[in-house]
Length: 326
Image (cartoon, rainbow, N blue to C red; front, side):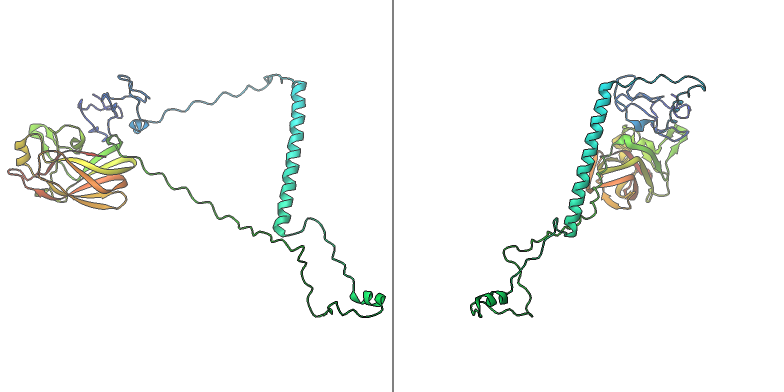
């Protein structure tokens, strides 16, 4: 099988190209290798996500339409029917009328904001009490004397209407960002490790991609000093995803004998791209273990660092057979 991205020969079950290091695009349903962009699998018709073809070169853009040759006659203009002309004039009149109404409403609102009365008001005319006294020929004690120093009382029959205070609206609130989508294993673009064990005499290479090939007979085995304390493996996603936990097969779980002979992680320190860290403790069991995070984490990568191990009966190399995130 050739790598669709660099055309180098690869193993038939390879997940990542050993030459260019990129993930080999396959159909998520049947596993068929994809050599060109397509919306559906050519074997079983499964819809294919666009991110499978992230490593492919971009498709060539279509050439723009050729310009009209100089001197060529333009297509004749079609005459406008009389009925359409009448409708156009009527639409123009309605548009002008609508603009006039909007301008009138805007002017009325401006006057309302300024507190100006819509019509002029004439001051009330009062008759001096002295004129009536002169006609009657004397003073009338029933009328109260006017005090020039007192302010005129407000007209109780026509009190001044309170103009409601217009409070300007504040800046629009920003919409809350949408949460990141849940992670899937197809979102992983690369797997890198601080080291891995090569047994060339047996043609065995325990590379990092063995940790997510779906086969418990293979494993990532570190090749650091001692039992692999502080050795790490990093998973990089194609975007930011919401990760709630992981399922891990710690140790070399090809057989019960190899599980006991090799070291396996006892605790891991998990590093996220957001800067958050967590430490999880694993059981010494030959089988899957579910690790649920205290709260889902939005991250673009995950790094697992070996903090402590369960020692093997024969080998000091620490192994992990399989891992998946959810």
